[in-house]
Image 1 (cartoon, rainbow, N blue to C red):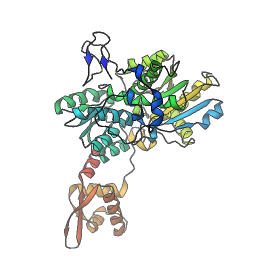
Image 2: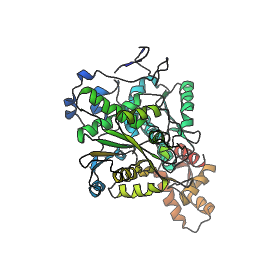
Image 3: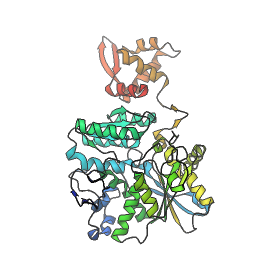
Image 4: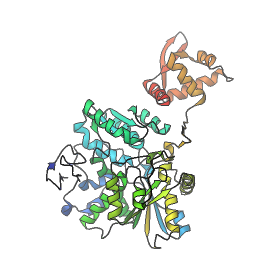
Length: 444
């Protein structure tokens, strides 16, 4: 791997910024002439299968990410098209960001004595939390106030620190940069660090091995995934294993459309959308995404809020439960098919980026699965340690006190409470640090 500024020819080797000191955007390159793709066939599936086209690292921090299934879509048969679904929900933390994080964390370990930081609207934060835990490092996640509770729960479960900042992820990027400098953290925010994008591009390598698609439809927020996929196919072209690149199609919602609107020549919007992972008002990687669309002769599609539930239902019929930010690919496919955009022998890949288990955000209210009696118990224990019968009395609810002990056992199994002390036969319970953080995320 090497990075040389195409303008001033300055060479970068360790900490690589997204732009050179002269202002020119930087690109990571490799010795493409000596890449032998036949070696890939003898390796296990996953991101690190393609190590000749990834940054050199001393230690790989991996949870067996990548190598996700490619499924033929039943919907394609109904449309008379060859449609395939790349199911990135099968990654370890349920999203495509695991590809980014394994590479960024592995590369950043020598520079992360005090830990890692990322600005994210949820998926990259949850992924960093998991991989930093695996690496035995602290993780700081800067997330917006508009975020699904299930993503917060996932971050807390892995022990990462949560900082709620701003309404959208845009506002958190500079905050994360300042945090990295002030605390001596390695910043893996995609807009601030090119390394992680190298992991995301491996989707392109897998698609080439499995399908060699003519079109790839990608949910688009910041544009970093779209660009990463473009870079992957661009490198395959450079190596000489493909003769032309697939057309890349960006999908955004009508409410937040800074990239798609420019492609389509319509007025852009930057409003909150139910597809929260796509809520990026001013994407710093916008120009890279536009380059990917332009250089592949691709296009963009806008999807309405009322089409998200349809997308979710149709993907569910394929056996895939995806979050709103992913399901936009389905109405986009239907619109393009209706317009006659595809030829019958085209090979169309849909990228499902994240699991529906990450949660939905609807009508400005965050849904949360752990509530009712268990939540009341947690709030009681946040004030002081209590024993079971005492909790039952404090709840003032029509339930048997034995049911309280069942709730206590379940909360204990989740790691949210623990036995604090005993007085005679009475066992007192209190919140764990995880339980305290859990409640903090609910009130933030």
